[in-house]
Image 1: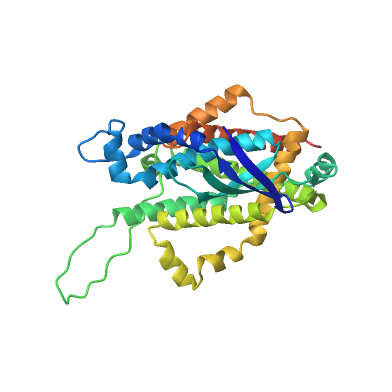
Image 2: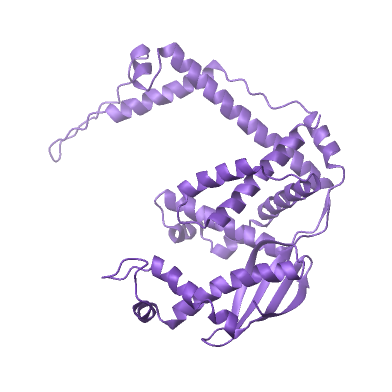
Length: 350
């Protein structure tokens, strides 16, 4: 692909790529864009993937096709620019189309963060020092188990409470939910438990596993935080801004899962998206630094995901997220597996 590009350093660990993709190369993406859009479009009287090009262009407009062409062309061009210019880009780039028209070059600006200079110090020695501290207590008391069982009784009572009607104006004291008797039958009604003692044992076992997992995660964060405190690390602002966008998307998803409107939620908080995001600088910086530190250790230790593990994890994700491109799922899976291996290595420093 013929690409004219100018590389400008805009800030520490950030660059802007400004240029054009030749008209002929840009135009070659027309058939690919038509195919992609045709598979996604829903037009009455036609099956997806079998929509005539003329009908598709009439429905979506020429600009719709051009922007899909730009999306595909820039994805390929970005990878080519990074390879040819040996740019170690990280994170999601910010892409702006500056010129787009049929039979013309495609103009663009791409702002991206690049791998900053990182000096982690003796990270193994730092991990060893943190690991020398005693782990958080993970024993589960009988009181904690009893509380869970009591909550289960309350939930069952509420579910079994009989609803009844009464005449208009009639005063009626609703009975309190009747708690089920705490015995073997109650235990068996909750699942495949032999008796009440078996229920108690399983609850205790699960609570211990959860508590151990939380203690493990806490120790990992302590190790990385200790390395971060000793490290010399430049964090690109672009990465922090991108991380805050991810945090906003996560919060919006959580609020929608609760059946609430996110804009209404913001009104309740009396904050705009910008004001909410501004308060996340420290958290976003910690999340970005965590990622950079783990990635740098992976590079230094030559940690890579085993092929079988990568395939299995990608296959698992592909089953859950059928609409996501497999290459993106594979990249995510590789990151998850690599991070886990690095954190395991740090935990083993004694």
